[in-house]
Image 1: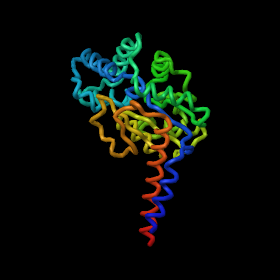
Image 2: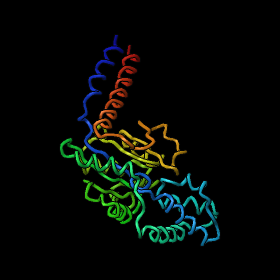
Image 3: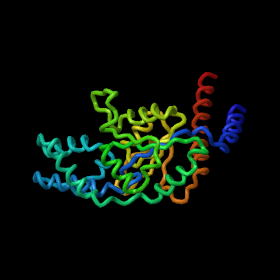
Image 4: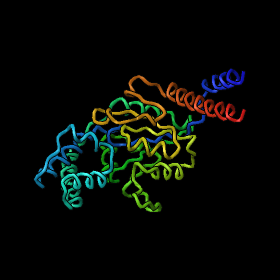
Amino acid sequence: MKWLGLFMIFMNFANCFGGVKAVLFDCDGTLVDSEYAHYMGWKQALNDLGSDLILEDYYQYAGKSAETNAKLLAEKMGRNCADDLLKRKTEYYRGLCKTGLPPIQNTIAFLKSLASKKDSLGIKIGVCSASRKEEILSHLKHLEIDHLFDVVLSGQGDLHEYSDPEGVNKPKPYIYLHAMKLLGVSPSETVVIEDSASGATAGVSAGCFTIAVPNNYTKHHDFSHTHWQLDSFSEIEVADFLNKVEEKQNLAKGYQAASKDKTQG
């Protein structure tokens, strides 16, 4: 009977949405189709130093910060060249971005729909990216969506108040914790949308409801720790999205409550 009672409560909650107060998007690979440009930047930088990177091998680096990838690639080469590698990659990548990179169309369409309703829904929208701030702003401006966000944060330039011996950028949760602090929302009120395992780990670790929407470069990542996995935002309406999020949140709470009750009983 306890299970039946919980089920009825969750079904009632599932038909209303008002608990989501913030939706935070990653940028690279989530809003802008930048992964191939990142790959070519690393490949050209490695070529300069007498090495190479094939596309299949790049998948394991997709979604990680540039600093992390520079260290990993330098270690793989067996050389102390991470700083040089990062500098070269950054220069090549900026060159490729000058004319603008293509959008992830379905996610942009959903974002614009959400933005048009955010005031009536009482929802804040943000971007939390592991990339450099100037790169993020350049992408958003090129896509003509820079005016839609309440906060735009970079894991490389906006987390100075945090300290961690392992670094503060993703997969650490600090960028999402900071965004929630600035927006005045709690983890239970926040949805994170990511395309990579590293970013998704940051969202989950921050206590947020985390959705994985992988692309061709990250579809092989392990997203088993996320709360919802989507192939794309194609044909997903805002109302249905918020309803589904709260349904999944309430079901999770129900399982936890029932498990606790069962253990105590």
